[in-house]
Amino acid sequence: MALPDAADRRAGTPASPPAAPESRRHSGRGAGPSLLPAVLVGAVSLTLVGLAVTVERFSYDVWGAFIWGPLLVLVSMPLCGAVARRTGDPGVVRFLVGAAVLKIVVGGVTRSAGTALLYGGLGDATRYDRAGTELAPQLRNLDFTELGEISGTRFLEVLTGLVQAVVGDTLIGTFFVFSFLSFLGMLLLYLAFCEGVPDGDHRRFRLLLFLLPSMWFWPSSIGKEAFMLLCLGAMAFGSSRLYRGALSGIVPLGLGMWGAIVLRPHYALVALAALAVGVLAPAGRRAADRAGGRPALFARVGAPLALVIMVPFAVSAAERFFGIDSLDLDTTEEVFTDVESRTGQGGSEFVAPNPNSPVGYPVAVITVLFRPLPGELGGASGALSSLEGASVLAITATCLWTGRRRLGGVIRNRYALFSLAVVLVYCYVFATIENFGIIARQRSLVLPFLFVGLAAIASHRTRDRSGPDPVLSDVPARLRR
Image 1 (cartoon, helix red, strand yellow):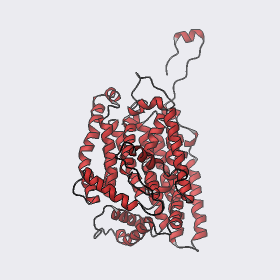
Image 2 (tube, rainbow, N blue to C red; image 1 turned 120 degrees about the vertical axis):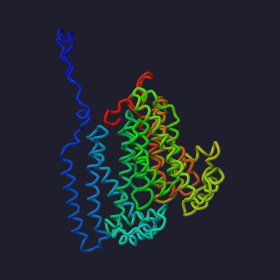
Image 3 (cartoon, one colour; image 1 turned 30 degrees about the vertical axis):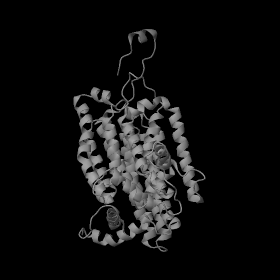
Image 4 (cartoon, helix red, strand yellow; image 1 turned 60 degrees about the horizontal axis):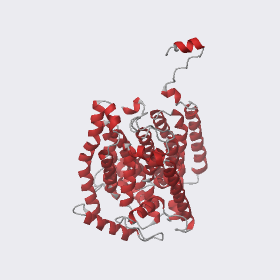
């Protein structure tokens, strides 16, 4: 403890108390030991009451929900606690556990009900469920023969079979598991933001990430959005660590890239292009230099090394996925034309803008991120989607206006720049989709990266130009490891 200054002793001024350790400063009231018993009692009570009501009236397809829903929420609790402790804010664990309930249980139930009511039980989730039901007995016996090429749609069928080999033949239980996978991706995205943009508005980011309806609704289905959100979360977390000089970031980045390459390789190409933008940008060099020789070296070598290793695999997988000989401008235009022809139907189609023109690209960005806007689509689902799009557009415009003086600092942050590149490349790649329903689902995979920029420029702290670099300033020592 520091001794009081001599002048303070002569003046009778009490000495300032020592600064509290970071873990104590951030330990809010939400981190107490009463959380686990309360959630445990609630989960057990829900399970017992639900089973008592449904087990005699319905099949396991229904009453299995009262086993797997509460169980997955309980499994999420230690993960939420670990994320809260790692970000230096144990008090946020209550919010994260509540987000787990919203995402896994509420999201899974509403998404399952939406599949039955809106699509008459004929959606992609039902098709994956049927394939998984057929594969589950084989996979339960650890028989992995005659599965064919496990990529693309077949990968999702096999993944569904693996899930049902564990949870059994329960549709809603399988929805819960996929919701849980996407929730893990959201936790990784939250970690990536807290560590990559330490002076950003973390509260705003988690409110947008976990509570926006698109985020807890669309990726809560048996399908590619749930698994892809997990992959994007892993890639984001790995990228944020690599930008700070931690070579261990290659592990989550590589796992996320593998999942994206197997399922939808063009998502991997979007992330790799954004990773390259962060590598080539001059952001964060001052902080890396101050961090010492080895961290500075790792910061400059880790991400380029990942690019050199992963780009050839992603390009080769994309060529196989789209059935083209080589990925170039001509074949890309052919793919875009094919996407337009396949998505321009279904009752919510529209004319997509041309992202290759100076005027069309800004319209494409607005389309992918915010449309349909009010009045563009009828029906209850269209009205809700347009209301959310208008709300996100208003939030974006407000953040850009109020934080316009901090844009320069955001661009100097490698992870924020990576996220901005993800948004811009993603909007270009998916601008050719001509169906508002598909756009709404795909949007849930890019909105988290938009929120990074909004929460970064919404920082309530100002920085002098001669002050620390935004990449490593204020990062707790344990997060730099």
